Structure formats: C-alpha cells, structure tokens
Length: 555
Image (cartoon, rainbow, N blue to C red; front, side, top):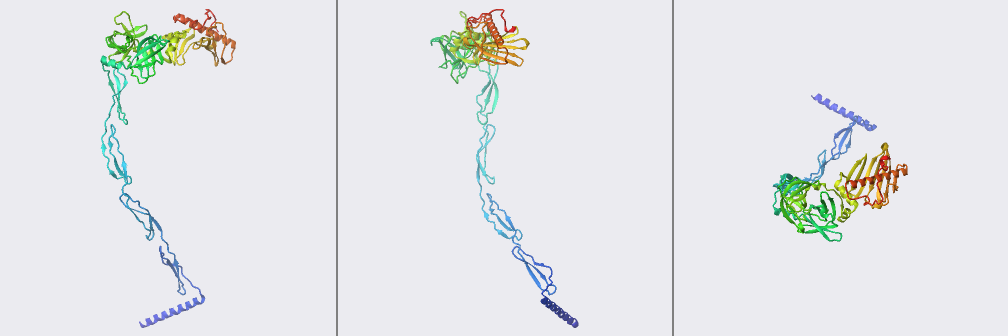
C-alpha cells in the first residue's frame, strides 16, 4: 500500500513537470492549440449565453459571449366589451419566455343598447304586434311584443260588374275597404222591384226637359230626354231638335245650353246632345227583351208640365214600324213627352217615347232601347250647323246616307253600288266632316282608275282627286272644278300633278271622264231613291247628262 502511494505521488509530480514544461514551451512560443468552440451556457431572451474552448497543449481556456435572444413579441388581441361582460385592450407577451410585454387593461361592460321593435298593425287576415324593444348589440329581448288579433274584412256596398236586368241576374264585386287589403269577391244579385214613388224619385234626377229656339232666339217648342252619361250626354228624339237653331236642357233643376249634337239618326228618330256638365245622375238603360203586360212608366214634360209621371202596361212587346223596333204601351203621353224615357218596374229605361196615334185610346210608341246601338257617333256638330246642314243639298244627302249606308268603319260611312265592274261610293268622313263621291274602274291590261269628288267645299271649289295606276307606276292629279260652269266637256286643271309621267292631255281627259261618270251616277242615285236633291241644287247649273257618251270604261 505504501508503495502504491509513493508511486501515485510520483506520477502526479511527473505530470506537473510535463505540464510545466509544456506551458513554458507555449509561453515561449505564443502558440495555442485550441479545441472547437462549445456552448457552455445557452442565451435567453434577456441573458447572454457563452462559448468556451481550451488549448490542448497548455490547457488554457478561452471564452466568447452569445448575445441575448431578445423577446419574441406575440400580440394579445383586444377583447370587446359586451353588454354583460368586461373586455380588454390589446396587449402583448413574449412567445418564448411568456413575459408580459404590453399589459392588457380591463374595459368595462357596455350594458344593453335598446332598439325599438315597431308595432305591427293587424290586417284583415294577419295578426299584428304591440311595440317592444331588444338590445341592438346582443339581440336580447328587453320588452316583449304581444300579439294583436286580425281585424277581419270590412266590405263596401258592392260595385256592379254586370248589371242585373228584369230577366237576368247581375254580378256585384265587394271590396274590403281596408286600404292595405282591398280583398274582393263577386256575388250574383237580382234587381229589386221599385214602387212608383221610388221610380219617380230616381227619374227626376236624370230626366231632361229640352227647350227649342229658332234663329231669332224665340222659343218654338219643347221636348224631353234623359241623361245617357254622367259627362253630359243627353238622349232624345231627333224630331225634338230637328228644327232647333239652339236649345237648352234642364236636368235636376239646373239649365244648360246645348253645346253640340254627338249623334243623330232621322230614321230611328234618336239623337244625342252634349251639355257642359259632370257628375250627373245617369239613367240605367236596359236593352233586354220585354213582354206584353209588364208595367211601365212614362216621365217627361207633356204640354210643358215638367217631370210628369204616368203609368201603364206594355200592350205589344216589339212592334216593327218602318224598320224600327218600338215598344207599344198605354201609359199616357202627350206633346212634350217626346224623347223622354219609358221605364220598367226596376227603374230601367227600356224605350224612348216617340209618338202616339191621334184619336186613339192611348196607342203610344217608344223606340226600343236597343236601337241606340245603331247611332253613329261622329264629329260633334252644333245645332246651328245641323240646322243649316239639314236645309242644304249636302245636308239632305247626308241625312239620306245615314239612313241608307251599307258600311260604317274607320270613321267612314259608305253607301256603294257596283255597276258594270265599276264601284261607285257616296261617303262621309265623320272625323273631318267631308261628304264625297268616288269610284274605281278596272281598265284594260290591269290599269286602275280612281276618281274622287269632295263636296265639302264651296261649289265653285269642289275638290277632285284622280289617280291612274298601271303596274308599279302611279300618276296623281289634284285640282278644283267650278260646279256653276262645269260641263261634260270642261277640261280639268290641276293644282298638283305628280308621279309617273304619261301623256298629260290624255290623262286629264281620262280624269274628266271619270268626274263626269261620278256626277251621272250621283244624279241617277238621287232620282232612284227620291232623295230630294238634284245636281242643280248642288251648284251644277249647266251640267247635263248625255246618254251614250264615252265613259272611263271605254278608255
């Protein structure tokens, strides 16, 4: 044991001697033999780390610091305060060491923000709600809304969709008066039978008394009528106003001057007058069939006695008199009832009282209401103009045309005849008030000749329009003729001459022949139907018809 201790001491001494020698050698030469750097202490966010190495010869240690890492900032998001819970401001901490970098502070809870929940009005079919409130931030109910029950429909008295008559049911539409609803339903209804007093009380609101004046403003007659539309249309007999230069209409104790005549027909003896009035009570007109034995009432101004009512029965349901449908009845009527209404027990106008047979036992007639549909509404004409027209040749022709027309369309009233391939027409333009005659001839090789003579103008300036079409080419000439000097040989002159150029003299001669043919046809028409007017009446003082003369057909 002792020997081992001695040896250990010696070894230690020997090592020290070696180290000393080596150190001395290094000191003497200043050269170290260092090992690789090794980390002896890791850096943290705030504390430096360290690296070390040692010399393998002398054992000397060398040290080098490692910089502190610094904090890694991580944001701590702000937390919004709610109605009931506190919030926080934004902050931050180190993502490595979790140290607080920016502290978060508390934001106090906001409390509820009240928002009004509007009341909802109940409708006819849907419930409503009372006013309430809720928090606008979190939606929590603050004041609860309660239910208000639906109102149910509140219907009006009904609007007539299809009028009921004495023989058919009508239809009414009932509408809920609540503006936001306006629900509707339809329901059939029947007319109620009225008493004579009820019929009278209604009729006096729409029955009219018509007073007639001559050119001098003197009262010359009177008649009756009734309100046909609330804007002032008055139905009456044509013969009531036939000789009127002016007239007044008294309705419901108010008197109005007649502004114009909107429609008239001498044959069915009906006319529609216009007064400046609105909101008038209107007669309910029924055009359904009637039966003998039904009770009827006549109301008007017989012998000038305003609003006189009489009662009777239908003695013949539908009497045809000169092509006009009439209701025969025995309700008392007199002079002055003309144009007034014949009324059934439902208060409907079924006819317009027109005449009675003298020296008879109440043999009275009313134009049946469905004849109103045959009236032609054209350009309004004043009573004065109608008076003058009825006393001029053109007026006579026009009255005949209205009574005998073969077609009415597009504002044009026509009477036409086809003679040996040519179509002759007398017509009236209801919009512009022009009375004219025209004709179309189909000539050889497909050519078509058209000639029109407008009788609207002064006889010294009757306007003619003539055209010749052949293939794609057309020539048109417009000019005037003087009826006082026109003969079958009078050369036409033109105001406008345009289109395809053909031989002018030949064309104008052809047009002249067309005008002559028109006048010959018109003359024959007035004789054939005994119209009561002649070419001479229309201003053709020297024109004479020569039978066998050349016509447009021979061109």
